[in-house]
Length: 99
Image 1: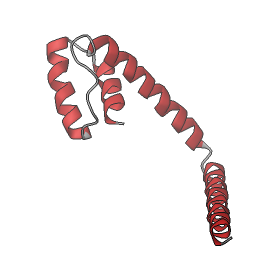
Image 2: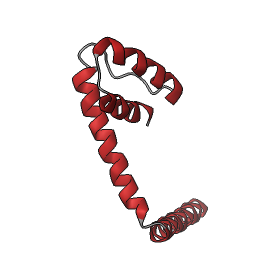
Image 3: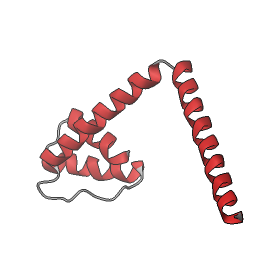
């Protein structure tokens, strides 16, 4: 009987935490109406960067593990010259690889 009450208590605490997290998320999106727009733009840039990566980089390279933004910047800058990647493509690839 104790195990059941402990499980029930843990589930109740989890439900309370999830409710509080959902309420906090709702409040933060109400406070910042531009947050949804920013997230949509970020997702669009990430998708465009992935497309650019696949068309420019994936011909020779597999998708790398996540590196620090500084390392990614250095790598992409060097490859930009070798692969004649445009500045726009460079910006989108950097965004994709550093997120």
